[in-house]
Amino acid sequence: MIAGLMKRRIDPLWEHAASPLIGIGMTPNQVTSGGLVLVALSCAAYVYHQSSLAFGLCLAFAFTFDALDGAVARRRHMSTKAGGYFDAMADRYQELAVFAAIGWVADLWAIAMIAFAGGLLTSYAKARTAIEIPIENHAWPDFFERMERLVFICVLLVADGLATAMGAASPWILTGGFALYALLANATALQRINRAFAMLKRADAKQP
Image (cartoon, rainbow, N blue to C red; front, side, top):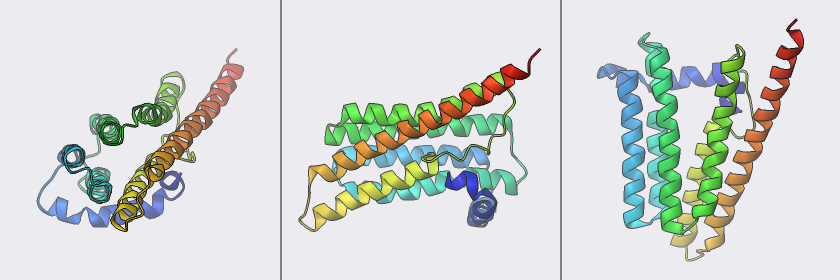
């Protein structure tokens, strides 16, 4: 929702932040690959040290780095359909790695599966609609899109880690927060499915 409604305001900020990457000659696909590697390393480290605070902070950095690939593409005039596809696939693998790590460390496999399904179906609902009718990629300001999901999961992990550091650790912080994430992700998937179904019905009505 944030990215959809505030894209014109957010994009210049990302493009400014991408200047160091452009300065060293990185391509958009290299930035995407770098973000995927950072997320994978953060997840592997979390499985080892099991610190929610460290994991949340590492993910915040990794996701910020990953978000710069589009800015690099715009600044260097290197936007391509193949690059957009690669970025979307890398995003899904990042989410899978994060949920697998949390599922492993906190033994929350069921919630992790439902949470991943919500994000995946949110993305697929729009992609599948595009096969049937032409759509505007940025005209889908749904409630709990990727940016909101990333911020939520990082804040949740940091909150869990801080509670542990202050001696107020509770398994319900991570469990309850992750369950709320899963609920919001799937509610957004249903919101997007409903919009897509309405668009397709209107398209059907226009056919002779």
